[in-house]
Figure 1: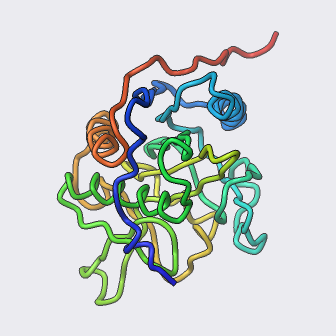
Figure 2: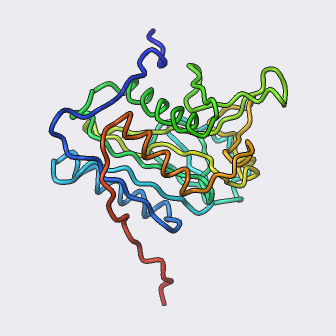
Length: 244
């Protein structure tokens, strides 16, 4: 079987396609609101009435369970809200200090190859980390991006970024998460992505004083190298006021 590393390449849209919208939310977005917004956008992209979009945001602390989630991997079910989701993968944590990027791209405009698309997402994250002088690596037996930790032991490596996508009519949604400066203890309530042999890390945990804005600039630059030009737009706004 072809390895994902062998599939890695740019995933540019065909000539003449409009730029991908690039939206950044400046306050945490409830998971239910994000999911509803994604569903609406993906439908519009598939119907040709909406532009492709990458939406960067943070969530309040929560766990999500992908389609392969093992109930035994939810160690602390009462710690944070748990959301069942249609993306691939297992349990993961989202919360402040973690940059989530929901990637809504039309693969009919690019290449209808899901494995190559996942490899391209990995390549985007690896390039982003390299800009921060961190060597991120892919592993064929587990999705995501990993960092070797020789100071902890010869075979120790930690996960710094996760990938979980879903496709509908060849339009992608859900996406990636990059640990910038989250509370890493919050990952202890689950077995992240079903992997027990390795831990998790972040840019700040690795000794880099990176802000979310710093990370966003690099993410955008590396995305454009991998997927093509972007156009900054306003992010969706949600009513966060409490009902009377």
